[in-house]
Length: 92
Image (tube, rainbow, N blue to C red; front, side, top):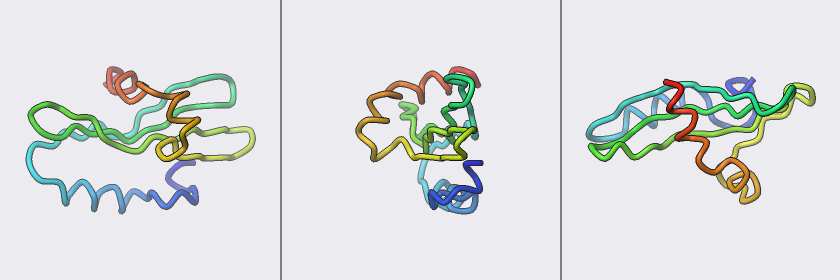
């Protein structure tokens, strides 16, 4: 659903942005975490540099309503899901 959503974040765009990165790069790829029966957090994560600074794209997905919302840039969602990137990364 995220890959086909209208968020503007496509697989090709992600690959292009990651290819432009310099230095050490570890790609974790797509990860998901179930919040409730209809809501999931979906992220494409990566680490950059020797300090392993996590970056990526994080989305809230509502399956029932067929809604995909980017977490980054939405203050309420950022607060709600703060720290989820590290939690999703641990599932690797």
